[in-house]
Every structure is written in structure tokens, then in C-alpha cells.
Image (cartoon, rainbow, N blue to C red; front, top):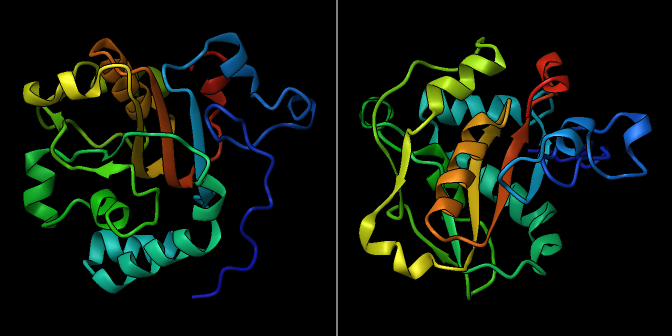
Length: 215
């Protein structure tokens, strides 16, 4: 796998979307300035339309596990050293619904996350953050529908609530589109006592038109 062409983007510090020329000086996109998300920072490896989209689809939908290992390697080679400064206690993958997990056989975010390099003080766990129920796939939905469909879908496993109090938590996801899922997760985590939420995302989709009006 060749990695040329990554990291050629000026991104919003908070949501990771590619900045417009007039936004670069502020380092935040206009929607994040107007309506701040619950999460605090976002770091992504590349755009969703870039060269890593095909390997991700092979891994995610064709169950070609070697591609997942290659994506973890790409992360370790290209971005992990830039994230060593982050002081966090936990790294949690975005959980799948029971139905999707049974159908796919694995959680793609966790398979990538458990192989990426991070500080030894950061504990990786797929058990702290849970998902309540199945929802319709969000692709093609408008932003308002995405927020409504994801509302209340996640929760923190009760026995871990005390452990995450006043902590910084990293959430790892394979793809960030509208940001609705990660924003809802950040809301739930902060409602349960987490201090800061940082997103680590493999691929970031382009900003939808609706983001001009909504977070």
C-alpha cells in the first residue's frame, strides 16, 4: 500500500473537516464556531475520497482482515508520532449494534484501534462504551435525520462510570461523515463525567451542505 498524497489538508481543529480558505486563520470551520460540538478535537488520517477508501471497504465489507492490519500500519507510520502529546486515559472504539456485529463478525473500528500505537498510559477498551439498539444505516440521510436516529443510542457501562470521571477519552472511528455519531458519543461521555473527548478517525468525509446550518 502506498501512502503518498496524505496530509495535504488544512483541517478544522475541532471536527476535522477540510477548511475553506477564509477559515484557515481561525483553524475552526464556520459551523464549529457557530455551534460548538460536544467533542473537543478531531484528528484524521485522510479524506474519505482518498486512496485508503478502497482498502477500508475491502476490510469492512469483504472481511479481508489483512487490509485492516495495513490500515493500522498506515496510522502508525503516518500519524501516531504526531499524537504522542495527547494526555488521555482511555481509547474506546465506536461500538456496533448487536445486529451489525453479528452480520460482520467484527467491529472494524476496534480491529484497527487495537493495533495502533498510542501512549502506554492509554488503556484501550471495547467494553466501556455500549450501544443500545439497531438503527437504520445513516448513509444518504440528511443531517437532521442523522441526529434524530442516533439520539440516546449509546451508554456507558455502569461499572466503568467511576473510572472515567474527569478523564480525557479518545474515541476511535473508521469513518466520520456528518459527525452526528461522534457528537452523540461525546455528549453521553460528558454527561457521565468525562472531562474531554478527542476523536481519532481513519477517514473524514467532506463537509455536507447542511453543516452550514447545523453541527
